[in-house]
Figure 1 (cartoon, each protein chain N blue to C red):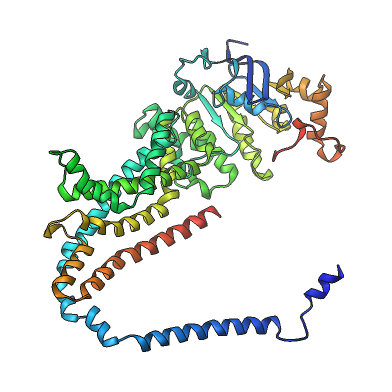
Figure 2: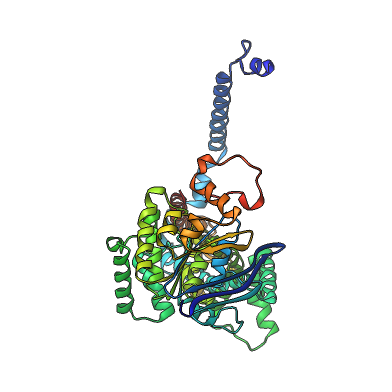
Length: 277
Length: 263
């Protein structure tokens, strides 16, 4: 016992604990300032400005980058989200089904589509499907293909999220509903799923952000001028102008949507945290 | 006693190797109020949950209003409409207001129109004395208020039988009275009630019969005066003495059915 007493005493020799802490923090600031200064000195600012911030190039992108490219990005994302949500819901319910083969099939789907890069799915939809089934046309042209490709990937993630949400609803809710005479399906739709969605709203919104970025993979489908979204639009313009400004502007357009969405998610999470307390 | 409203015949229920109910026979007549008492783990809640088939009995029969619930072909949802159930943890639907908690089941299950459901909801909220909370959400209510809403929700379905699973066990002591008052009112109105409870005063004053369970069997069954006032079995006496005067209980070896839960 006396050993610990001795250890807890501040040492008389050398730096005190508080001094050490102060020194460590000071060192971290020094490293930070040094790194920023080194970058500022090393960067060729004129060149960077030339490459990324040509005002006239940026100006000629408007309004098309909003009215066409951003609009298409949003359209692709929302349609993919809708397909993913519908399919994800079906898969989540299959995963919770009392019928074995349904559970098994849903599990296989989730493992496969969560494990494959979204890019492969796009290539599969854009190239393999038309070759394998000649004459079949995915309805909606590019829009239909994107909705399907994004939806297939998103469904795997959303199915797991929805399943977790349904299981997070207390068991007593289902019991109360059943004891009032609800059939299992009706109890699920009227009582359980509405509560599950409250729980999973933040992760679902996160999924929307991910889809927003994944919509850039459209460029592997080969799109017409009218169907270009932010990434393709920025890249095309960057190659015609031999300048990177359009890439930067396109990037800022993504952030225009993702940053507010991220903010909304954090607000919802904080609110949900409060509700638990 | 007229035709029994609830009838349990030779009921067995096991959870895996754990045999919770071991041959229960019980009749509850129309308008009768029966309190089921007993130590935790005695199977009283399981018995109650078997009466509306929230738990599937392993063996035996359950009849409510002449319909056999244990018949595999029975329309269980239809039978459950006639059986109201009140839970220890209230189980209100937290995403709905008080009124919506009452109207949604009526509309979805009974197919009542909006006006009829709203009318039944308002009437039953008034019966439990919570008309002013009609638009509140359950989370803003006290436990006692939530439980009264839960009772009103069950009543709005027009049940012939009400089951209560330790309705006051999750409440702060000062809120128990309001809930018991509502239950007493129902009993006086002639509702058939099966109540699992630890409230001995309620059992003594309101119940027509008291059933004492221990170890998955009914040990004693009679009027409150008999079972509570003058128990014949040692197990009943032991349980009652511990319940009525917990401060005087001796320290003793814990056995499986005396390990106290939160009740």
